Image (cartoon, rainbow, N blue to C red; front, side, top):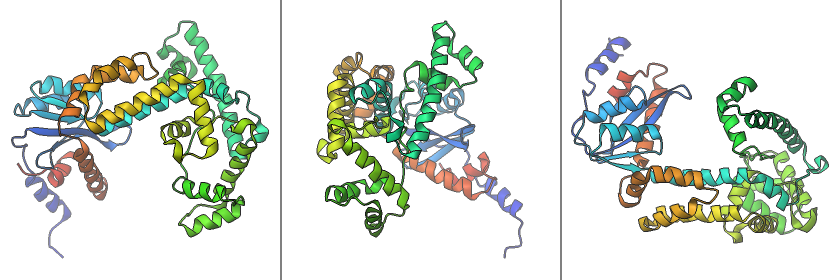
Length: 387
């Protein structure tokens, strides 16, 4: 009901936007997506005032370094594990203490262990006696995934043959039409997972489902009805496929499954407490720990790293790095050693990038409310706090 046009309101909003950030000592830096997978910007937060103080048009190290150089009063820079922001902080704010985000450190450790499981899938299948998979024992969906695995194996053999002939990753990617990421993963042994784990609606109800199964209810339709009374919203087929897998697992020799579980599921089983596992899962984990001891060592190293972060035990970090050098987590350990100062600060400093992640969530909400008009100056006008 106001006698004013929308363009006038936008011009007023732009004129009233804050100009420049005031003095700030502790900041958090992270990226946000203008267009996911294509263009990204940078958000800078004041960790003491809990607010956004500036938005940058991209996440290039030179742009961030120039902004930091204009604020020599900064003493703390909290960031994720990305190398770009680390380089920018070293160049633009050499006087500041860089703090690696603890959540990202824990997530990186878990991802490194998952990658170790994927590289060990060939040895795991040999231990579980599932090197030869019988398609007759697979469900329809599993059979489709197994056929896809066989096709991927043919492509992987071609990639390894080219690598054996001395071709570089770039040349292999050009000649095969595959991405460099895929080629690099194949050469590192990360293509051994036959049945990739996919999240489904059944995951939150697995504990109740197993309790009903152990209590003697083996009918899929009845289990589905009982889950529905507990709030399950999935279909009948999801539950019946689960019961089919359970029956085939129990009929398998020495209690082991005829097929190796997916790498993601194995990673979750190996990091769960033994008392929380079903009998068949506990036997599977025990067999893997005995047959692939290097994977058990990697699991222990990951859990010790998580414990260091929770207890802030900075004294245990040097010894952990030495042990990691000869394990399946060697690559992750090298990354920690290369960023040792920021990781040490994460164990000793109180700062964290958690609130920066929260501000990014707020930024996404505002950007989507603006229906394509979310250019940099308007976002600054709506989100940047006055100095």
